[in-house]
Amino acid sequence: MPELRSEPRDPITRKAQLQYEGAWVPVLIQDMSSRGFGIMSTRQFSVGQVSELRCEPFAGKEFQCQVEVRHSGESHMGVLIREMNETGRRLCMQLMQDYHSDRKMRNQ
Image (tube, rainbow, N blue to C red; front, side, top):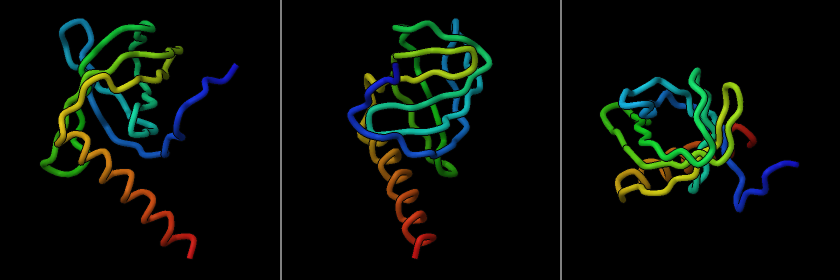
């Protein structure tokens, strides 16, 4: 049964890192919403696991947030944002606004 989300995720990809057993491991954000991310990883995380995620969505602008794994497969997981500061929220909103602006321009 598909997971019901309160809002759709935008297909925005960015390199990021997740903390795993005390080390930062590279992951790929595949999609995002204001509440969470779809992530590809070579490491499998457990449902309910809480971790730190960090990402530099724009050159020189980094955010870090606490996420909780909501579903996990062999190479993909969905995470819910548990804590994020205002700077991180602004950067994520800017990413989504840029995506929608670019999409609107392409469709004209």
